[in-house]
Image (tube, one colour):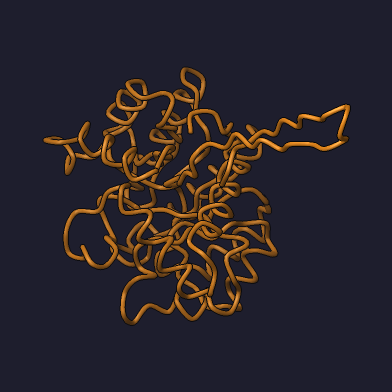
Length: 283
């Protein structure tokens, strides 16, 4: 992504011109990071600074639940030029009290500025006990996204087929399928529904299906994400993830798609700027 402007000087005598290009540095956007979580309690500000130094100028902060929301908002308030919070209820935080939690999401939306809805969705990996409640909570948050016009960030672990079924019943065409888990056919289905694919550290793993998917579909409809502190890319796999590792993900995607890393940076940054209605200001 290059933010640039041009000035042309024309000589009246020679009818020649000189093109001077003032361009700013390229930048990355991490569209999914939980750096407000307790894993970053000891060095949170250093993590933010390392992201800046790595060229990650914007970081999107998906919400989890009422327990962590104030930490997220407090961190975003300290770095309003860089950190952009979302409002939502994570599917693994859906229990008997999910309606109360959703009411608190709606209350927060009335009191703060948010840039999207989520992370919401369905998770059938950890616990299926609240499967029906997860669907209801997801449907409700899709409704909030429609009402506000904000993009929705969808969690679909072991549940992509169910996610597609819900989206067919409650269509909304602005958002990200976070940590996209599917094959090329499923990727095309998501794209046809209007969604970008969130690509993170998993793409660097040796046996990642996403490598084959990206080779087939290309990078036009993707955004970069870390899901910090989880899913750390190679060569740091097994350690805590952070936003400064975004360039490693871009480099791997470039390798898989046969493009320059700068091109991946440009495509994914523009996709994220458009989706979250951000301006290219602080690069």
